Image (cartoon, rainbow, N blue to C red; front, side):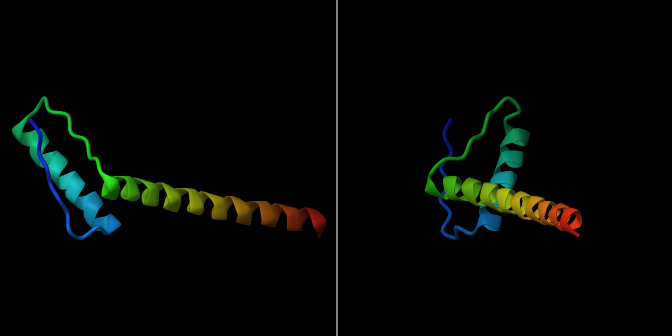
Length: 74
């Protein structure tokens, strides 16, 4: 079975919450079903979430490295 949902609003938060709701509804109605999301908005959402995570990691590690370097210098 194929379910096609087209979202007009392509904000990351909206797509993530809609995807979660759709997966919960389908898991309840069809217990053995497997759901996956495709298309350009889904790829943009996944890349946006990954970019936010990686940017956060980079900033934290940069601050830690900078603090260690300053502690070694002084």
